[in-house]
Length: 102
Image: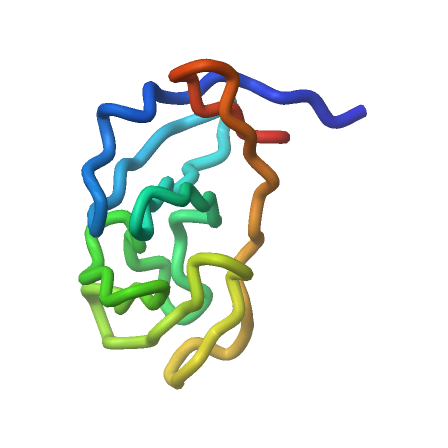
């Protein structure tokens, strides 16, 4: 059964930036897009690049290893070389806490 887990405080992620968090064995990239928060799998589907280290442009993050672009709001891959999307996680704010459903 899925549950929400506190992973960060809202103030820790400035607009236009990302933060890597780990829940169990899952690496999750949290993004702040103009005050809205999103969570996707941190591992690029191409060669495993860390998406939390990528360049965020609006709602798109570019993998720092080979340039694949993903939509952080859905996890959908936008450009090659990524062969498919990454997992998108539901999240919620509880006060100042960001909680991700895992």
